[in-house]
Image 1 (cartoon, rainbow, N blue to C red):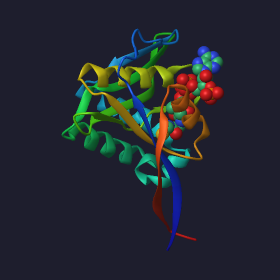
Image 2: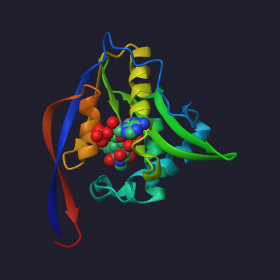
Image 3: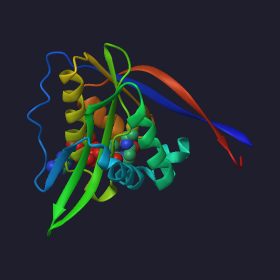
Image 4: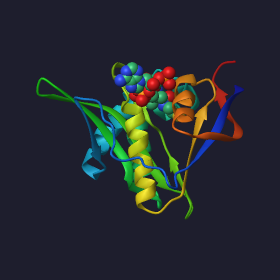
Length: 184
Ligand SMILES: CC(C)(COP(=O)(O)OP(=O)(O)OC[C@H]1O[C@@H](n2cnc3c(N)ncnc32)[C@H](O)[C@@H]1OP(=O)(O)O)[C@@H](O)C(=O)NCCC(=O)NCCS
């Protein structure tokens, strides 16, 4: 059994005085506010967003649908869980609805909100849906009086780091996540 270390950044944004509404959502997409009944759809969107990505090597629960369901359950039961910062992206086409993105927010202190996993399924990336979900979560933090947002991102995840920087997030810490490997 070996151990591998993944470099991650903590990135932060001061949300005071910024305007994240009205949200820009590309045509065909809708952002649905949190409802407990939507937990399975959040889990499904999370699974299809993360299963082939680097974060699924680091957090093994992201590689399996059951793990994503468990994770969504845990997040939604946390003390600081914020329905206002938790959104599901839906795409409607020819009368069919596809759940293609998810984000969750947690109140960590009276100042800080943490963005949990933001994920967009591969077919729906590069259209602004990830940006729209993050903006919706940040507006949710503002709505409940939080002044700062943070998240953690794996450094190798270029597109995510770029997206956060574009939204104004700045790196505040470098962390190393140890992951036990079955074979090394
Ligand atoms: C990171 C992630 C959430 C981004 O979601 P997304 O929906 O693709 O994000 P956006 O479409 O808002 O932005 C992505 C790119 O598309 C571009 N874009 C947005 N709208 C666009 C449009 N209408 N036309 C062309 N390009 C567009 C953005 O400028 C951005 O470009 P960049 O990569 O050069 O910065 C997504 O790639 C993902 O789910 N990855 C796997 C899971 C993951 O790693 N999540 C992050 C965990 S920390």
